[in-house]
Image (cartoon, rainbow, N blue to C red; front, side):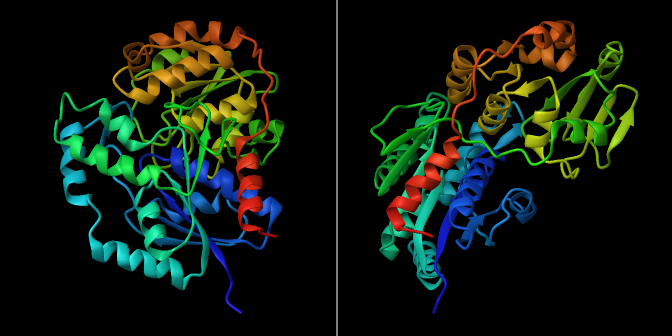
Length: 363
């Protein structure tokens, strides 16, 4: 008897879509431990191994373009348009090969976050598809048509595909309200390690304050170390820097693959300072700690995330220039003194897992 699986097609734009997909897969495995996931993406398999304990296999497939990034805070629209011209519309042979693979793997469902190629391939294979999103690329690209008019033809193509999904789930903070099957709270991976144990491993002094600085998985070089050293009573954990773990006074730098699970780092500190991206926001929301966030005014999603932080979380906006120069350090005590005044609600991943279980009867 062939083992059935669920296919998950994940956008490789940053790590936020992969983190959300991991949260959903882990929640499904809590309900049905034997379910196997077949993950299609160019995100490294190690990322999924850190989060998903149940059975899965990774298939290296370019599923999405998203936005080509110059840095964690700046996108390259010209290059994005060029890449989309090569990627879309999906070639017939590419869709045929992918749909054949989905059938061969005996997939019961194809979940897309937010790789539209999965919806197209699922239709061709006669398999139900599910879209999980807080935005779709057609909506994002609409914000750049004044700079790149050639995006218009890709917007319409992608919009039709996203609308063709059999099931549609939106995860707060939602950028464009549609009429989905369900809207769920923020989706976040769960912590694994107790706060005190992570702090001890990091070398944070007992009873001391700690701040995590994160660029959302995209490596950055910072020029504010000397400014941080002046705040001797605060430990700063800086993620995504260098190739080895380094502890220098009150500054701890961690490489991208440090062995520390990002949700555990968030759970271990008293506040986070960094880019307002979906997965970081969701982890901070469920940890119930303050967020000194850097928004990107030119990025459409950023306005929605910022509004959610201000309305539903405890946040303090930091201008990008102040972040780069280190001026944000002078506001760090204001961030640490803020008390989270929200109660983290149900994790959206559990709601999505229950929805999946009801639709395809997994056990």
